[in-house]
Image 1 (spheres, rainbow, N blue to C red):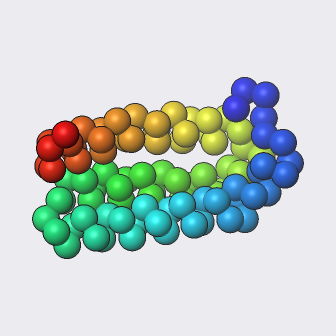
Image 2: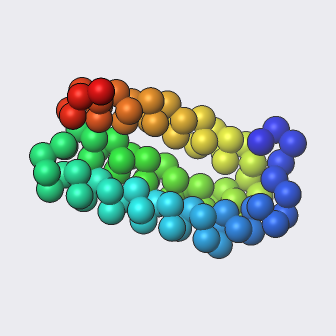
Image 3: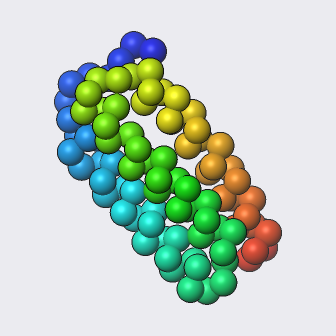
Length: 90
């Protein structure tokens, strides 16, 4: 991120990737919540919120905020893996 994004990548992420990704994370959260995996669902909801928050910095070219938000998102994947592993086993 320090070098910025190529215009094509930025456009794809802003116009498609972020919206679809955030929606799929929210859908997964709803499904896991229905089967009682509430900790996992909350982590997925947090991921969806962070990912959706990338839309504005992508469109405005605010790469510093984009990088900050991606750094917030990254550790949630390990947390989700741990929560899922604890909930359903290895």
